Image 1 (tube, rainbow, N blue to C red):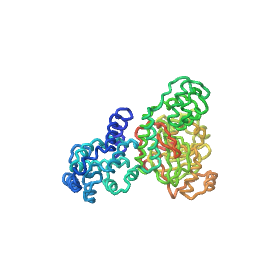
Image 2 (tube, rainbow, N blue to C red):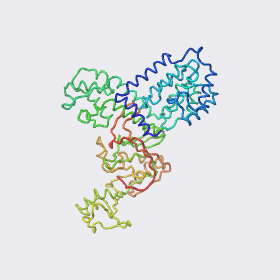
Image 3 (tube, one colour):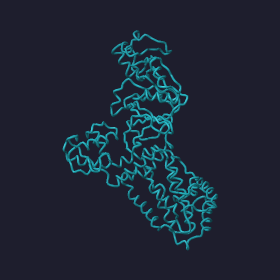
Image 4 (cartoon, rainbow, N blue to C red):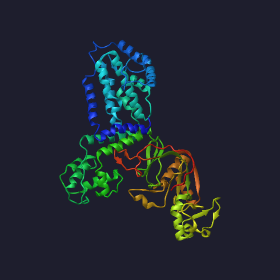
Length: 558
């Protein structure tokens, strides 16, 4: 199933739970599980129930003769295609049931039902699997009803596995594997995406759902700024708030002190770091807003990111460069391990950095910059009108006509050029002042986005770095280049430094390209267990990644 459809399914169920409208229904799910645990749904006494042979016949008739379960208009109804696939599975088993016996539901059914009722841990809606519908067939206890329950469990497992794997349709081979699994609990665990990042985020979902079940965290009223050394009754609430999410120790959270002491300051700095805020240890406006975001919204954020991770199926592989727009940083993975992390500058509003996946195929040392016409019209032309051609010359810009023949900037009447059409091409020479810095990383995409160095180093110290024209500026560009050239082109650090010192523009093709993914994860968990939250700078609602391919140039953005 597509991500958008899954989000719609989620919005119909789980998000309602977050908003409080589905809790009553979830109590019903708990009741279903409790009934199973107590054995009330195990069916009638085995002596009075159908024989194994009667169950086989009933199941065969359900699948072979009708292609659906005896109970129509229910979750257990098997669509024609699913029915045919399940029929093959059960024919191989000589129609021996997996989930039920003469006495009703067996241990596998109990384990599956418990897992389905806990689907919220993966941001899936338990209601989707029709848990209550199995009660009546099991309670009836006759062969036809138990056959209906059998098909219910099989179809529920197929849909659950499909949801976890981010695919549209259930796979009947999942049922066959479930029937032959020696340890069914381990088998269910194996269906959860193996990506470590997904599993860490799943653990965070459990943590925050637990916080919600415990009543959430207190809101901190507005007032004078809370800062170190201040004595304020609201510090007690701040202690509780920071303690709830583990930023402050349990002892610090319980302390009956209104003093904003060093422990509170350190805890607040940890909170600020986890939310991409300025780490000043002061509860200013933005920090207070982040502290007061309800736990339900944090859960929704985690849920959306779990869905996004599922859409990636198996993660990013053993080697990849992952640029997270929301975090405004990148991570280089090699051998499944993080070997470089760098702050980045991403596109500002109106010049958004797109979501994409591609592969870095070449690296350009001492790059030139051909200025996109939009930037030339909006930003460079007004300065050339005001300051004259010297503005261009002092910054290393050359001017070319439509046939890329060089022109003398001093002979052009810049004031006569309109605001809507730029008849010339501007290209900035390589050098210390070049907007792309010392190195550029190229990968095919239909918007001509790339990663590059920058001479504007001070901007990386900002907490919010959505400042570029769409391309991604990399703080540790030299380190990234050396690592990629070493693995992709067998270059040594000395080779790279020699190329830089030459001052010449050199493009190096990577014999072994490296996959690059530009994503916007707004919730994730570090390897040390730190839960991170960010806001998407563009407030995008659809988190799926666009698979861009080489295409027409739509502008060379910076």
